[in-house]
Length: 378
Image: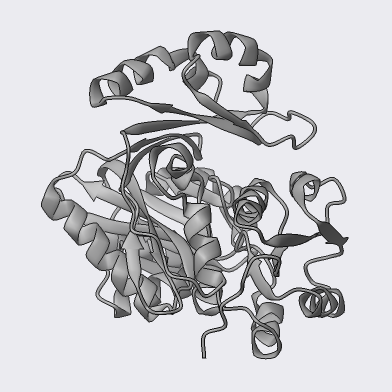
């Protein structure tokens, strides 16, 4: 039975980083109260929470006590203890569930599950030793991407091996990575990357935000441009695969799905993020409803809003090294909406904010050229 929560109910968010903060702001404009749980006492999300708990994500007792004080639970990122959340799911109101979470927390499990649905993925195999990588390369060729099976993000926990000689030259570093469970993936010679935010509510309705075209630098998202430069057929394929994932994964809320677009126009799913995603930030200004709004509507038992995009958008991430340049960026892009997360120390490579520009496709092309100095600092 669907439990519809009315305004003044309390939403408990596990994780109080920038995604949790933006979820909280969305919830509060709808009239909900927000509680947040995070081990970091200076988490940026706490500034907008009605109340919060500081405790370790692995503290089952603290999480249960937190859960009992709120009307519904959700989580803002996947690098948390899925087994504890699975237990909480049976005892508390966690409509977001844990099926997609537990699947996406392990890349081997994730790729195996996606392939079982008929969703295209690269060739892959579990690897435990250098010999396993050599055997994989004999079947699928170089380059080979080696990734930790768990807890990798923004390019961390992975290596690209271009040849047998490079594998031997970097053997010590590879063996260090292999101390954790790892997956080998065949390199996909893609043209560009895209992602889609898919939303599903407790009534079973599914909807999609416009597909965004993404550019990464050093493993970190630099820009997302929406809509992506895809054909109608490609967009339909993206949505077909996203629907399969959402329905079979029993999604409630939003999920980010990253794709490689190959030279022949084919699509390959790279990875899943069963929560709001960096590449969906543009929805806050560009669409009638944001990814955060849809997530809150879904977990509170309400119906999704039909999605439409007001204008094309370009979202640009800001890292710690960009903060000193904010005055100049404000002057250069007076039409932009800047979001600064107030995360404390502006450390290099740390996501500190983003800004979004709305305009025509021609505007987006010109802005990308003008952002060369921002990109250079990534």
